[in-house]
Length: 250
Ligand code: PEP
Image (cartoon, rainbow, N blue to C red):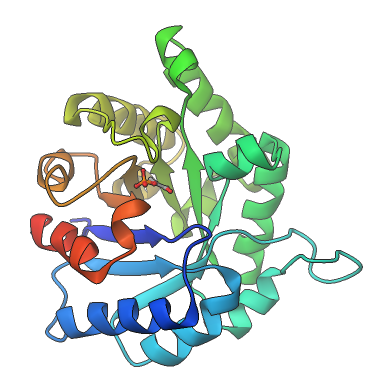
């Protein structure tokens, strides 16, 4: 049985004040045993603050990106080892905003995934099609290509300690959520693909849905067989909204 995982991607939002009140709100709202697993992904600068506030809690934290190199002359970049220093459990790789706005290719994503895995972080691999690709009937081939790049680089065993997030690009930050049927179909496709290489890993791996998840649509999405939780952007920026999704998930 896979426990629901709720991951909050804060993107480039926040301030020290906001981080303190948001995390204290989440801590207050999850004093008793959380019925779902929760993780937050603050900007790099606030990871130390998240570590200080969350270290004795049942909420995990991770980063939104990493550089595949372990160290060196990469001005402005952050390595897997640095993220481990700050107690990160997870790191996002291949978020569609990084693919589209910062030019990350499938190969770049595969290198980041492998660097995270080798260091002992759990990569959260984001995949998903654009609206144009969906309308052209290319959803499965795009998702398959994005998965294959990582499978070829790291091997199926690497997915034993990783998370996949299916995030249709047209649903991210737009208020347009994939229907539970649309999302389930792609999640089943992803799980089948993993299963064709390793049935045990396919049974355990969390496949999250991302794209305008909120307290009103989460229950229907998370009720589907292959949807194991959510990667949430906008609705993870207040404790009230994030906890409403948590409450809807149980
Ligand atoms: C995201 O950033 O991964 C995301 C899914 O954003 P939103 O929930 O705002 O669509």
